Amino acid sequence: AQSVTQPDIHITVSEGASLELRCNYSYGATPYLFWYVQSPGQGLQLLLKYFSGDTLVQGIKGFEAEFKRSQSSFNLRKPSVHWSDAAEYFCAVGPNFGNEKLTFGTGTRLTIIP
Amino acid sequence: DTGVSQDPRHKITKRGQNVTFRCDPISEHNRLYWYRQTLGQGPEFLTYFQNEAQLEKSRLLSDRFSAERPKGSFSTLEIQRTEQGDSAMYLCASGERGEETQYFGPGTRLLVL
Image 1 (cartoon, rainbow over the protein chains, first blue to last red):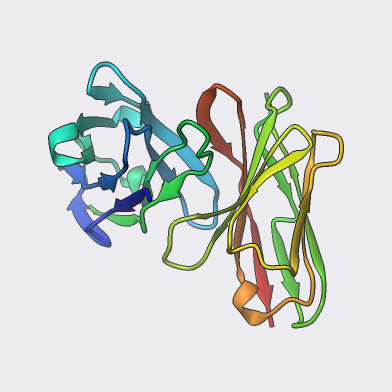
Image 2: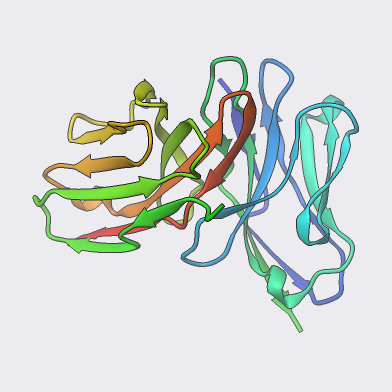
């Protein structure tokens, strides 16, 4: 069964500092990987996705993520955070070959301090 | 492209009442998904449709839950005899077969008193 672990429940960073959010997955085949962001009371917005090819993927709002098969990781990074980046971030795996659901991690809440 | 829309955005009901939520997907998308998100958790898959056919249902979808997509366009999710444990955000997403990204709506937040 596929699963996603986001080990950091809550992260606080200063505005302008760099950010890395961790994501580890368990999947029996080549995974499709996603990062979504959720502002309070809102739905999910897709930040970026990895299907195949270049393991460093670029997304919206200046975010990037790197797929590392050997570590089963797909960490999200941003070189300089803005106050508007404060939100909940979810990593997800799937769907693939008949398994149509996305499996999400429990999320990482990001707080930005001035 | 107006995105995925959901109605209502918020619903407060009393235990034992029935509620129905609506989801309108992105117009050209043939797949529609329902997820449930409780406080402090990630979304959990409930069910999905390919056009009007319901192809998979999660074990989370008890017999009090029913979902339909009668004409392959909008979908409804009904919860009968609501319980306090049904309080959650209900998220709808749509996508296209062969393009694996799912696009989410704003959600319907349900509170059962």
